[in-house]
Amino acid sequence: MEQAITASDHIKRYLIIPSGGSGVRMGADLPKQYIKLGGKTILQHTIEALAKHVDYIVLGISYEYRIIVEDMLQTMGLADRVHLTVAGRKRFDTVQRALRVVPDGVLVGIHDAVRPFVSGAVVDKCYEEAQRVGAAVPVLQLTESLRYLPEEDAEQQPSQATNRSHYRLVRTPQVFWSERIKEAYQQPFQESFTDDCSVYDQLYSDLALVPDNTENIKITTPDQLYWGEHLLTTSRQDRLRLTERLLSSR
Image 1 (cartoon, rainbow, N blue to C red):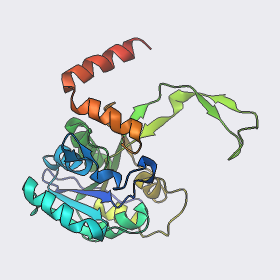
Image 2 (image 1 turned 30 degrees about the horizontal axis):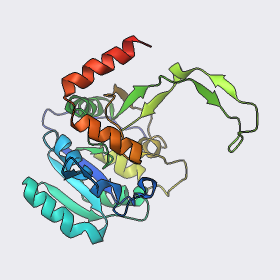
Image 3 (image 1 turned 120 degrees about the horizontal axis):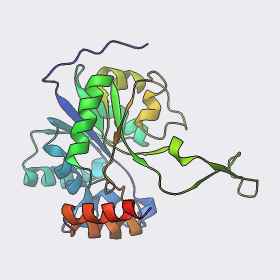
Image 4 (image 1 turned 90 degrees about the horizontal axis):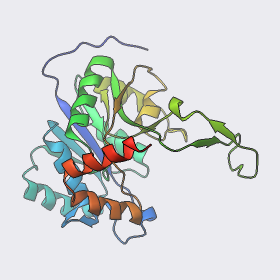
């Protein structure tokens, strides 16, 4: 199953952004990716953060929001670099459909539509590591203690302390050689597929872990939307200073 990877200095970078989410956890009338943050939709902020680091973008959207997205892309001057596909019932289906328009022999990243604060340096590093290794994912060290529940829904059962140094929070963009992730997405859906790496893991084991920036949050709740407003109005230099202070106090 493992295949040799041949690297090139000019590998095209594709990016899939699944944008068919309903926003149930946000409790809003609009899907969360279309909620305004500082005068722009979260989706627009996300695209702006990534567009300069990739060659082509594939957006998997619900058909009912096609006109809104097309107008947004025209305003951004990106209509010729973004391909729209129709979202499926689940995120898995949306990615599977988007992969059909991605050619072989390229690198393809898959990024959450509601992660607008990803660092460009992290994006570039993920593509570089995926080109070298086969796949790459941004991760964050845990700072909280963990308890292990032996059984699902077992809050009343004895729990166990576990070593957090063995675990990482997994984020996006998750980047792969296109042939490999397309092959992985030919599998039937499983409940254990919580992200793209978990699909990839079924066939391949080579995966680089790239340290992520703390601000790369996923905006899915009102609290996270409030935090996003704060990040938007705070300079990156100030955010880095605050992060350093927090890390030094641990």
